[in-house]
Length: 102
Image (tube, rainbow, N blue to C red; front, side, top):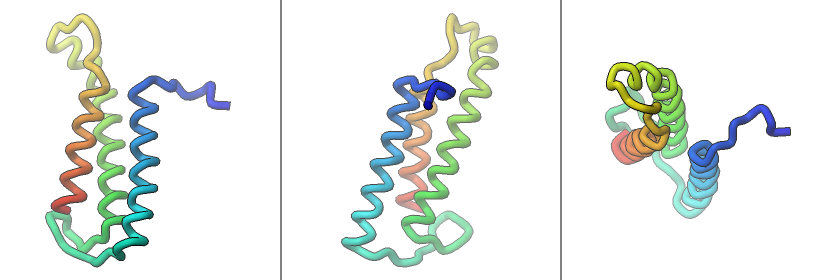
């Protein structure tokens, strides 16, 4: 059924983190209902809004990294493409920033 997907360790970690975040946000929302607030994003958002925006940004960061990895390999004369763990780290930093200050 999932033969079309390349389930590497970084991909499995990425999707596991998303699942854990959704469970955590559900529990958090039940324990403490959210309020609208305005941060650096150009609109008032709830925790769920910020999570969604953060996940969209994380997806774009990962896609951009995969698209640029070959170019970086040539530009920097690397033996192999940079690890996708770098994009996972950047995605986590982005998501934490949006959740905290967004």
